[in-house]
Length: 411
Ligand code: RNT
Ligand code: ZN
Image (cartoon, rainbow, N blue to C red):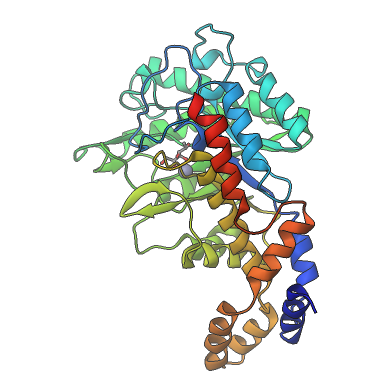
């Protein structure tokens, strides 16, 4: 008997069908963030340095500096990933033919190459307006008291929704546009209200026109570097907004206090919004956006989706950026870990867990949960890769190292 046959039998004893899990995992798309490939630099002519209270640290050589390089790196990364996925772009990844184009003047044609690439690679596309790394994003953006600045960013977000709508139409798969703004204050504000009213008004203007191939999402956060005392777009603000206006709510795992778990928030909010976008990340002491590892919270998060089959309403997106290690490897590690956590969730004997709990047998619930950790899910993982044409084992890293030698190190 092969290792897989043994694993299959062990799971069958628990009432779990590994075949079903493998099939299902292959159909769960992950929205892969393009910005791990270039430390969120983008390709803007006269680009400003990264701002908005987020930061990449590290100086690992070989980062992508052109759209062609970034696409080559993404293609390489995808060769180690099983399943069909999505690519999440930011507005700063527009290609404007060497001409400086204002962000409120961005148009679908600036993303034609990305759409062509997505078609070639069988990817869906998702989108993000960029309200940072820009002279007009020095202070507040959508919550600014300066109407000139506020309108500029409203127009930018409207332009981005049109671009996303075009992407969705072209690729025949609805795009998700995620609005995150860095607006906040370093020191204690006197008026915590006025900026939130401005932000609500801006969002109303942005979402006024209905889109056919695009879904809107809003992302809150707790604080940023340089904005420690006040965040306009807090969790309460956006949760209220999303419920009232029926937009998607983005839950970034780095955007809460360290003892809060996003895994516990999903079922709290899911019935009140049309959907959730996850930004799977790994905060280390702050919203540091470390590469996602297979830790308990990632397992709990993905288990939530599996236990209640929430895949129609929850969009899994990634949001980490590490500039201190090989960026292609960073992607592969984070994506694979997300998939591994999903597989572990799909291999749970959900009914047995629920039954133990509903009947008050908490002893069995705990015993079962702990037994599951030692089940041969890794063997099923290898089988999943192989069946999807991706080699199992550690060889992928040798290939990434070779790519580093042949391509990245020559940049
Ligand atoms: C920032 C937010 C936001 C960004 C990306 C680049 O704290 O998490 O999602 O990381 O848009
Ligand atoms: Zn995020």
